[in-house]
Image (cartoon, rainbow, N blue to C red; front, side, top):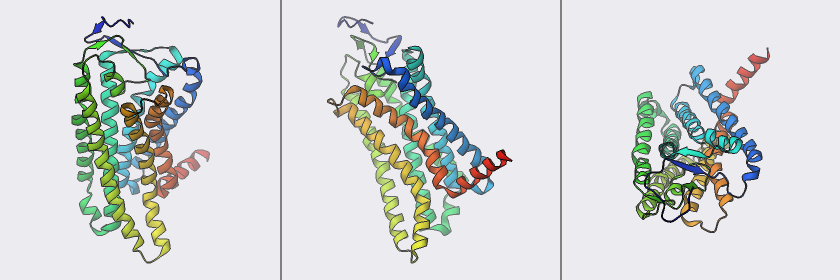
Length: 315
């Protein structure tokens, strides 16, 4: 891989993922917690899907959205972890140019879709608490499916320019990506052309999609909290708020790392690269791992069904 300024890869056949620069000798040890998180994410989300499918009482909008979230988390973690582990275990750093752009698309598209599903879940809780008599007529099964498809379509359309713009750039000096996966800005920064459009478009998607989603979620929960505090009994307030607590925990674990790592790519030039990459992996691995744990522990219907299944296996 030449670092010469005269070498231009107008469309390089491969990129080289460097992994975690400066910590190459510790890659095997670093892979252990990453692999454990991936296994927990796979088992946890598959368990959520199985429980909701086999328990008729869970065939409600809230749990359908939860199933969508589980599928999204499976896709998000699987789009990154296999290649990441091949880097750590087998030093297999090369990734085809097209495969790199495909990975970029899936990471950002799925992230945008997950953000939209969180908005839909917030709206579901708003209707269930603030207008319960109309919940079944507003959030029908058809509406739930249409909402999920709309969020997927939104993510696909808005993220498609990422790989398209990246594929049109000439790449010079090197095709080594100082990262562990094909993150949008990590790839774009290798181009020797002006990447202002890609930079500003990515920032506008971050603010216009995730930023607006956070605002909609905040508005929903402002109305929900106002309705909860109007309840006369303290026990009723706690029980009603308990139905929202798992969703709020999942939102926090998703948005904080995602927004932080996106802004750090653009403005965190003084942040050490290994720390940046670790945080980027937290954004992709921790939410898929924690979401099934959060909903499994804090949602009584799922917890009871899981305990029942475990008791059957012991007998």
